[in-house]
Image (cartoon, rainbow, N blue to C red; front, side, top):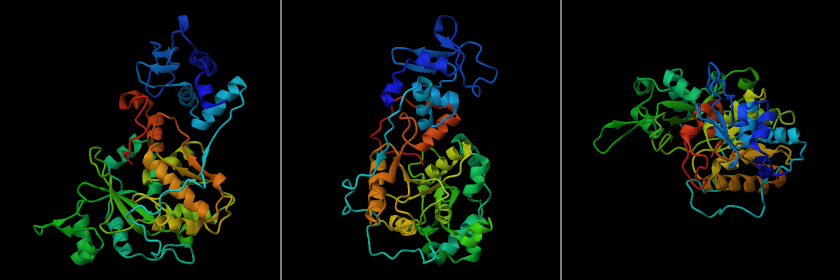
Length: 409
């Protein structure tokens, strides 16, 4: 059976099989969303539209189709929910995963910020990043920053991230005296060369740390630190704003090139290869964290990285560095490429999958991983929705524009 077959199963009948007791007249039921209904749904607010084959709670707003109902009631992810429905009805589910197509490759001649295939890799023979230009300053920025502010903690909670993940991510908040503290250790010329500060046309000293107040660290892969449970060194940073109206969610140091976000995770994956779950490659820092959070909720440990910094092709330095690290592994490795449901996500998948294919990886094992409800554009939206189901109806329509290139990472 296909996904459409699962979505066509009568919604009321499925609800009963999921343990939802329909009220008199079988028109409604008590909502299962105990988080939104702290004292119980005494009014039977959960309604069913048999013509559209959808459900909706008119009190908390949670709504969706048969698969979404199964996810919400059981707490399973998208694939597991589909399998659960199939089990309930004794169906054989014909699942399909989008795999890499060797003949479908991106245009490698298009102009991108990083198109030079001759640029030297920054990873040494020990598969660690060598000390990069300005990495000492980026480590200093991280060291003088504060622990996560209340605003950052609340923002992480609202998006579904746990305190444990926030701690593991190492995200910090820019302090009020961060620039002053840096100027005590480094000259203005050094900080300008590192892209942290600059002077405008009027000669005024400028920086972006008053608007982009979150420091997102890019850790190195260091065997000794990882083996002893210590935090690896910070080689690169990006700054994030928590202001939802800001067009630029992230800002990097001026003139810099990102390394692989979660490189310490990639290093752990490579060390333990053979005894690890598949690797997840994402488009942004928050997508990588969302994958880790979803796995943690199911008692699993996964490894997720992000290739940030704009459109990718086979000449992108960070993508070539990724393939260099993975080159020594079994080319039959299953690699999940997590992309948004938009044109940018399609281009990202094609670039990563075709590049890995060209260095010998099995195209059948390079998976476009979008195992969340079709109503959400990216995995971060999915995590936020299942963490706050009562907000689902008020925050979005049921059918978002899948051609949109906008995202909030």
